[in-house]
Length: 322
Image (cartoon, rainbow, N blue to C red):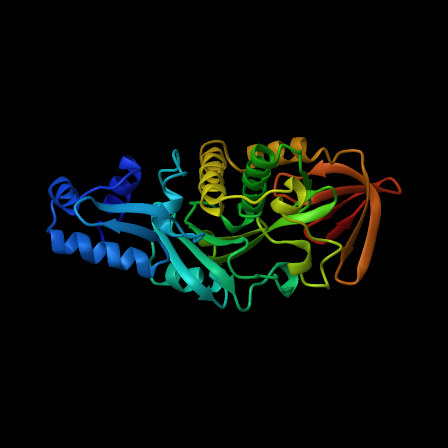
C-alpha cells in the first residue's frame, strides 16, 4: 500500500469531498486502485464519507500511531524514523528491534507498538503498557563509538523527552539519573538501552523509550499508581499521540547529531546542566548496597560522582533518591 500517503494527502488537502477521478489523475493510479485504498483506510479505522457524484471525504482519523501519521509531525528528522515499523502488539519493541538489528536493519529504523505484552524497564522491571494510551518505541542506532562511550546515549534520549514534555505540557520536567523523566516527582518516561558490541566497537544500540501520554490514573497499575503520571494527568487534556511521537523523533535526532558531532562529553554536560544535579544530597542503591553523599556531577562516561567522607565515588548505575 505504497500510495496510501498520497490518498490521505488529497483527502486532507481538500477538507471536503474529492472525486475518485481527481485523485486517480493526480496520483497516477486507476480509479479502482483509489477505491481499494479507501477500503483499506476504512479497515485501518478511518471514517470516510462517500457521496455519489462528489466522491470521498475524510470524516475522522483513528488514534493510531501509523507511520504516515507520525511523518506529518516529524519535520526535521532525516535519519531517525525514516523507516517506521508499526505493530498493533509486540512482546517488546526492544526485543523486536534487536532481532532486526542483528539481520542488518539500517540505522534510524523505529519500532512502535500500540501495546507490549512483556514491556521492560531497567533491571528487568516490567513496563506497564496499556493499549492505545501511550508511546512504546524503540530506535536503532549504529554509532561508530567504543563500548565505553555508549552510556551517554541514555542521556540524549532523556533530553529529547524532556524537551518534548516541556513544549507540550508547559511545565518544566525533572531529569532523574540515569534515565528517567519526571513531572512533579512522578515518572512520565524512561529509557532502556540494549546493545551489541565487538571488542572495541559498538555494533548497534537499541534505544527503547516509554512515554506515558493519555493514560488515566485509574488505568494505571496499582503497583505504580503513586509513582507514575502521564501528560494527560498533568495537563488535564489528551494529546494526539502521533504529534507527540513526531516531535520526540525530531528532538531525538537533534541530540543524536550533537552526540555524533561533539561527542558524549557534550551530551553529559547538557544533561548535567539541565538536571541541576551538582551539590544535591543523594542516596543511590546499587546491588543491595546504599551510597550517600553530595553529587559532584556526571563523569564523562555518564557515571555519577558522589562525594562522601572526603572521597569521591564513581557509581555506574543504581536507583537514586533525594
